[in-house]
Length: 62
Image (tube, rainbow, N blue to C red; front, side, top):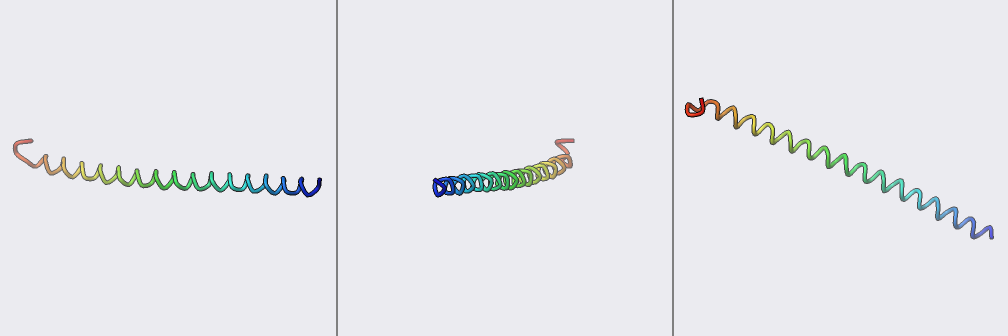
């Protein structure tokens, strides 16, 4: 009985540890994705700003 209880405790601990690790990995993945998307948005915004600035110099647009 004690051996079965010990094995169950080990399985429970291992499962909880795997769950914790999975949550940590998912959190890191979401942070990386968010950072990547923010950088892409910043590049798009900068490109748009540059294009609009260039267009504002054209006589046909003025």
